[in-house]
Length: 424
Image (tube, rainbow, N blue to C red; front, side, top):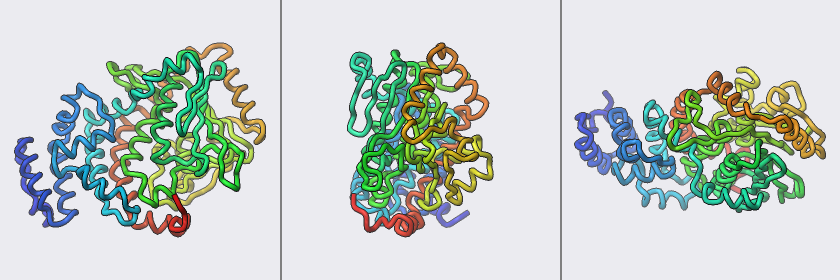
């Protein structure tokens, strides 16, 4: 038994008593490591009790960003308080103490438990209230403009365009909510049979006036401490998983065995490049049309983070060896190559990608696609059932939290991105 284990109170087995005794210990814990060991032990015994208390005994669905906030109030010391986080949030990433690692520990334990983990996955697949509030508006007008995403109806397709022009359509705290809301609206729209995801025209001097699919996570925002750890969990359990699995209903499990999702096929239009998170999005798509000069990378090694669910999904496309080369060694995959075509379904001239997507939409919808949802579920249950995703995200939560606050992340951003010289 380590010194940290000896210092912490014993697990009594009584939830309320342990909340009190461990809370007192965390308030006085001499070292962060000792407090973290105690949190793991406490959650190992009581994670289901904590989660049930936060979700009205599983009758309420609470998203991850609210769950960690509520946990701070329900079990003082288990995760950082709102006040402690507020003080951290104004700092650059390298100046932070890594308090949010405790969010990763908490969410990892929640997801590792089959009951609480499945319930949290269900919560993250539900349509957002903002999307439900505007779906009738979209049905009537056929277009909604959000700050960093637009959704338009073109014939039988709902087209979502990601927009962060200054940062090459990178993803950050300003884009996450709008992207997910737009994806929800596109999925819910009864007037369309398929959905398309593309990137908008950018402002960057090198690519000004050109559409770019996505530059992945905004590394400048990451370096400046503007991306909290829970952002990763929101993104991959929310918008990315919604593309892959569809939207859940409150009263039916989204597990493939119950067929309780609302979904439609997703087509990606890849202009320019799909870097990092952009490539991760492609791995959730049903059909991909890419420009002949486009490329894909997963530069997680140079960023010091785990590339979302790519570790789970990429080997299905390209095999284990190429997947490891891409994730561990930064191998670039040009779309118009044998390796790139393992991910991309169709290659078009750079000025003809939009027309190619229109043709794909027409081909998919001309004879009806009533079996699309059923075929998607059948593919998923064989390749990546919800329970496998839950287990993956349990590992991802803990490991990504450690990576997010690792000194190596800062070193990589300064070495490969010249982050210290870039402005928000």
